[in-house]
Image 1 (cartoon, rainbow, N blue to C red):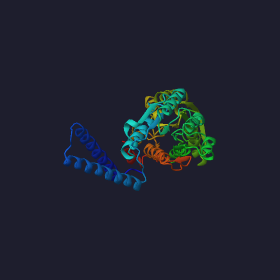
Image 2: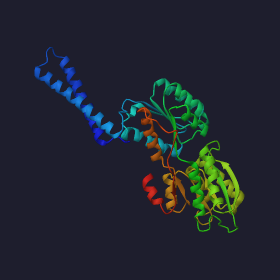
Image 3: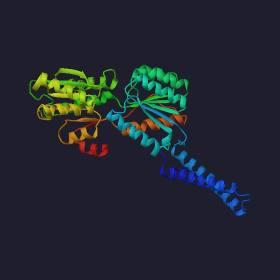
Image 4: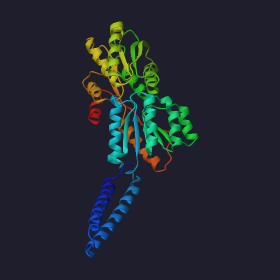
Length: 376
């Protein structure tokens, strides 16, 4: 739960009183004999400080939030220049400090630079520096068993975010009672929503009327489970709706806008008007795809459809403007806040489920303006 403004104010008042008390003590030590009135004032201030501390602690307990001001958090993000994870880490730091009472200087956030060896070194440094909890967006989800064991041996709980370890690893946390958990969103849902957005168009994606939907798939990192699920379930949503599909091309774009642009540019050159739908595993690649579509003088929602995932501000604006068919809101607010809340639960000695999921939200022309107001 969030720390109430009242509890925060009380705690701050306590700190202010303690600060004044400390200053008074220094002045007293500088004199040979403090007057009785000054001693009485100091005693009263000390008593007031104790009362304020007790009141603040009681308020924190009432809200279910322990004092986190002295707790250290180590956070590693797989790559800082990922658009979505930039939004995520910004909200994570804001929520930890403004709502949960962590001190900013006790939060260390590092860039994994897309290099698992670099990130593993960061984790080792977190352990050596004595952090109390880690929040990790792994470069490679397959490294989770090794990282989990490192954290377990150091008696440091770990919250994995965004890139989900495999089921066997999550089951191990539960069976061995390891303080590790995953917070994310089910990528199968995001893929399904993409497919539904195409199936819900007037011609169900079949722009040229040949009885099938011909598409290209711009995939993220194929080793990432989110990329795998979004790829599979976007198409499955169409086939489940009885729509015939034809894959013209599937190519990895590594979540990168420039790569997305190049892939779609080449595909449009190769396949021309046969391309009816462009599926992108994330919005960054979809923004690149839009650049290629416009350069080829194609028009989204008229002679081609385009969908992404994440609900980046620019992408949602494009949905509002009719330049993208749709996207899927990967709710970084709820995910970041949940990850932080669970970190607090670990630090408070509470039991945590091994998997904690947050729902995606389908973004179409019907609700894009509302989503835009939220993500701006």
